[in-house]
Image 1: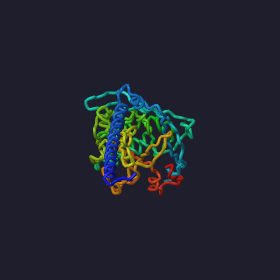
Image 2: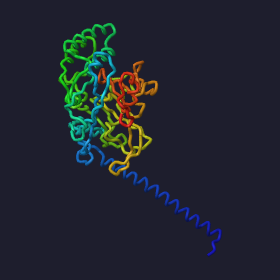
Image 3: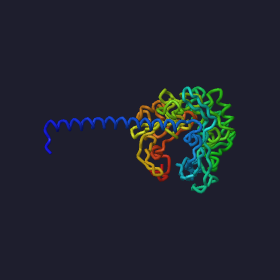
Image 4: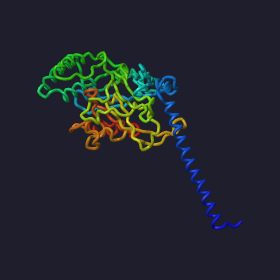
Length: 381
């Protein structure tokens, strides 16, 4: 059958018309279904009683494991008395199973927030560990070094030598030394009694603002976290929308902290890391506020991973998170001066202590002149 030019033009017009209708319908359906999915997410993810996801969020049903490694000084006498380089031996991992839960819930429907107390409990798992909690470790005297660093950083210059003499006298009366010999159990969660701290607090009270005191005069690397938890959080519950879902509005009744020398560093941003608003892509930079690290941590996309058959995006701490202000201008308010080193960051909420990034091998290189080799492996450290 022959088609005239006029008939061909009419057919093209009809096809064009139906093509346009199909495009509009397709676009409309896409928007429609996108709205349905968004509505479903907001309805199901909202953190209120009676919702399945709320119960999962309130008390995580999945096991969370924490691996802890200790560094044992194998030449304590030579190091402490003869000035030899410390020879360190890596011990572990010592594995703990975490039980994370939220308590004391309070909802505010008007501003769409939920306030709760965060509790994290950890139980030692011997069958997954490479050592026992009763193993003895020679390590640095944490409380002693924290006090020394604190006095050096915060004591008024005119009183610094006087305070140092008083502190030295207390150290001698308690027979405190640079090294301690304690079990893994004592060093991590259980802690050990340190009465010296109470006397030290009395000595420096007249010259310094006393930082948070030890719980029951007991010191352990994670002892305080075990007995106090991570604090009280106020977050967006999703009742008024999911764009800022789970974002932290306040921590311990503060919308900002006062630990650092700039507003940007004192901001509380992001979530606690357990959940984020839907729609995260590779181009996003997420924020995690962790009071144990005294700051907000930026998280960047690393790679695609599959978890239990589900494709996910893996985010991790950026390599310049603990860089100096010269390398990362954003970090200037975290640390200034010649004492700053990339890979190491002061923890101003825990006076006298420092933190290192998870790229520990980068930090070790800075101090390689004072340590004997321990076999640094990038993938592990």
